[in-house]
Image (cartoon, rainbow, N blue to C red; front, side, top):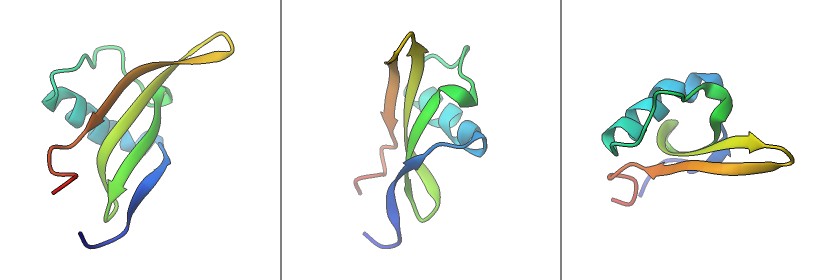
Length: 73
């Protein structure tokens, strides 16, 4: 594996990549907004995974966790 990789807080610019990954995994995207994307996994600045959270009172509800099929390869 080459290039920088890691996990970072999501930004609004990650929404298109999140929509693509969730769509490829046949997960719902109808109510997805940038504020619900909490973390992204990346390799060489390309989003490879997404964790989505929804605020619920003082807690966060895990909405989705999706990783690209190519992330581990």
